[in-house]
Image 1 (cartoon, rainbow, N blue to C red):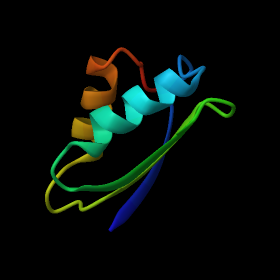
Image 2: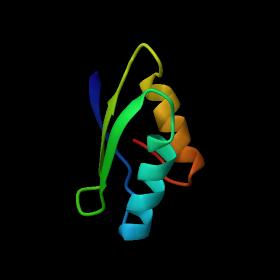
Image 3: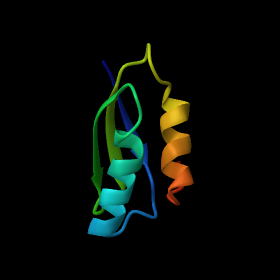
Length: 68
């Protein structure tokens, strides 16, 4: 498993947290996702043989949360 920490400055509340976690967590190859509205960080654990970090970023951005 690969670990990554992304920054998404638009995460600001519980709803944002759920949306981001749902968008990334539903992808095949993503093991776990934890978004923190206070720090604006998204911690992702994923299987790099099944999905890339770029695909995860695209899913989060498609849900309306730009990733830096």
